[in-house]
Image 1 (cartoon, one colour):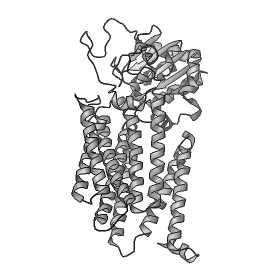
Image 2 (image 1 turned 90 degrees about the vertical axis):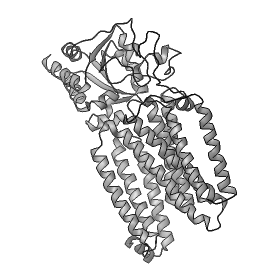
Image 3 (image 1 turned 120 degrees about the vertical axis):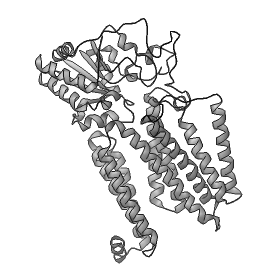
Image 4 (image 1 turned 30 degrees about the horizontal axis):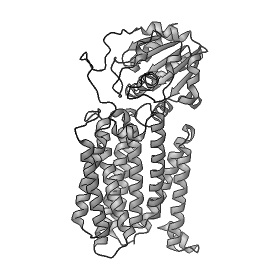
Length: 476
């Protein structure tokens, strides 16, 4: 309270002080987003936005009368949330980061829906404008959809359920009927009656639509879905901000909605697919070939090698490009791959990392993973920046990536990933493909690059294989 009292004694009213602090919080949100656009400023951006949120929370508490028991409940909730968030952030593994993002996003959407429901209970017993009713209903629908959709995304990424698309006959028709039901209820609640029972039904139907919305989407497309649901959550928060008359909720929610929408568009472009194709094409649904095998080519052979041989090849190369993927994160091998890169650089080898925009399970997954291992930022090269350099590379070392280097994206019009921009790993003089097995990626298709005469397969856990490569380079 002291901050507000200080503002009041300096000539500002309480409302003016609150507005100024909300403005400061909004500015910090925007500055934090700007800093997050670069790996160098990402950590500072996170801190900047967190300070803005702290200011917003404290300021919101000061708007409630000191005698209100709600203040104590809110402080307790803030403490519990802080403890849970801090422990989660400290203990989560990088492989589980997308799941945590999905979970936190779902919690945000659910919170926005619940806040709006609580606000609606006050509207029932009082006269209210149509704009306020629209904002409440909108927040309930979108927040519930985001909550349920994020829960399914979490379950798919955590492998609590299958990651392949779940479809059934007439699915789009059923979803359309559910959507029409939501629209009809929304019209009734906004324009004709105020009913808690109808609002509860609307919430349940919105949850059903959220589940049905994400079920037919494959695991490979989950990063795009999470980004889209994040935008939904932002819009729901903005809607609840209108219902509560809270400026910082409106500003913060709008920022999240806008940035999530832009990120979704950028990721769709990076995959060379439209958003409608990602959401409705069920890419990643495994199909059985005529030979009876799933995702396996029966008439092609691969060339496998040993860590000792590949270590010598790397040690006597001039240029090596490392292509990290989800397999690197699963094996927690980022520190070992940096050790290998450091050894090669000591021998005069030029080492760079090729980062595909949708490698991993969330935007920037590989950047964050390698930053954790203290890889230099100037070694991380985005796809457009590095693609022309593959033809000059002696070795393209692919660590756990698959679909992002699959030539089918350029050569096979019938492929579900056709048109997706990929890393030109096939242009390198030698290709080393590190994988546990010949299983296809999340798109559910074979990668012909594995059968390329220039490709050497090194099977096994990425961390173990990289450790053997480190030993082989040292012995060369």
